[in-house]
Image (tube, rainbow, N blue to C red; front, side, top):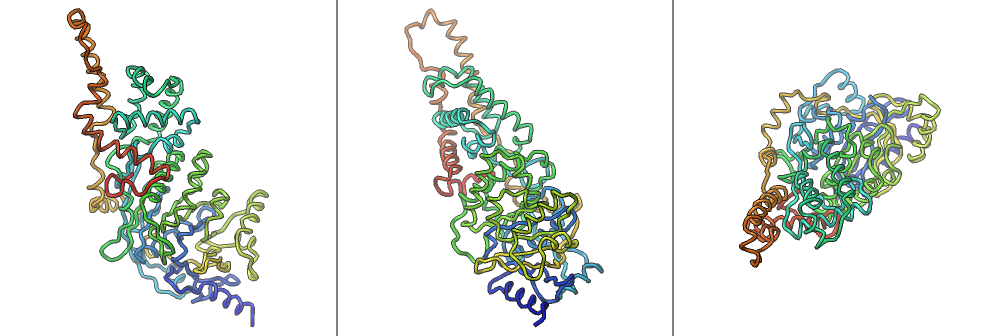
Length: 517
């Protein structure tokens, strides 16, 4: 048996799937694709996560596009973080040209142009469905990690949340939170300290400055109502295709801390909301994170640990995460070890450091009798990749250089008019894009301070005639008012559930009620 025959037999056996799978392309042997020798990605193990990496211009985005198309066509919803703004073409059919026809002939498939259902989402100035959460739903633990507070400051933050909970002061947006910080250091300082102990004014000042810094990064755009319900990410269209929800993040590249915290919040809510799936034949949702280095490069150590933990746990909910980045070393080792799928496009060795890195990267792949992995990674052409998947039995498949199929959707971005057309037909925009500013901590405290001033003026004028009369304090008047009670009964429950949900205690507390983002 020739080496080519041995290679063909090994690849055919290694990529033979019993369950549903996605075609990625054809195996390459000695620089030539073998027609019909399919490299397939099993759906059963996609919740074990994956990595797509490679140098700029080697085809990472198109590979991501191919997998998203395959998932959608199998009725599996997809969530994509579109950092560069080059994934919107999934909504429209591609166009057959000579290059695509030649590639399809080499693989042994017929090219069929097709567009897929897209929903644009946004946490910034981009158009699309607004994704929001209230400050209460974040809770003190996650908000403290976002602000990078020390233990003392985090303790103060927890006490402030407890104070707001006890006194029916809903924290919905950053305006509410800044108001409560101002209140407990000025007019309400004595009342607060009598029941909850003294707090350091300097610590409160630090927390306030960090909140303002967060506002400058655009966080005020997604703190507020109406909260986004993560169940809206797992929709199927009328043709049976999984909905591709695309978060447009082109204007947030310079704000990695905000992005990494947002992602963690989203993953935590998905984990707390989705039921356990057990050993399912296919994922419930697959999340693609393009430019993944933005998550890990600027995130604090505490935030990184939280992300690493949730990535380990979330696969039990039937959720797969696929990272896309230029270099595998952008991903922390503890996360990298969790990734069953590895698709490596070409790497370039321009320096001695590059060569050392490539050697280390090549050691992450199964040993091969047919490739020198280190040489393979530097010789791959555009649209080619070294691939290993986690098979249905749970073991790595043989390493294979692969000629990837062409995406069926448009390999270019949509026009502004096409994006607006998709937004106009969106039911979620009607559901989420109306801004709600109901009475919350800011309004309640503002009324209290106005009332306090009025009562103070009246007391000064009438002090000689009413010295023996004991009245309710201003604080009692406000906190026992009908309005405060009505607002508080609903929102105080949200606060408590939000705190427990972030810690990981309790079930899908806000399901069908408040959502999250």
